[in-house]
Image (tube, rainbow, N blue to C red):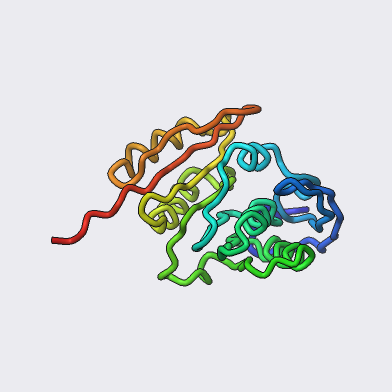
Length: 208
């Protein structure tokens, strides 16, 4: 793949599509992935832990999959909440194309696969689910979360899955220390070396 990474905006390698059989929301589907995106062979272990550990998403509103890859989280949100609008956000254009293709295969019309700058500024989220791209580095990861977590609605939850050996505990501490006034952060689940963090948005104090 050369210099391509799954967080590369426009992978230079030739796209090679492949079919994968996956289980989402209790059913089995044949979906499409490709090289140049995160975990093209299967649903990765972290995402699987997140999907098995997180309660059902809100039935309506705007739902965000941050760092969507080829779409297992976005597609699950869309399948389980057909009345909601799902935002599949990634910097990787190839990944976004795959999300659109897979949503079309499943007949899902409530998925918007877009780059970060194409989410309208006024949109607030009823939930955020994310297997965040830890390998972009701590500074970039923190910047990404500082951009999106404040867009949670009051009393809404963000669910983040992070491998323990890749800094889940330090991320938990950073969220609590830097955003404790607006977020209540707890470890919601632990499985297979991964931890699921739940960050709940506390209600905004009305201006006096």
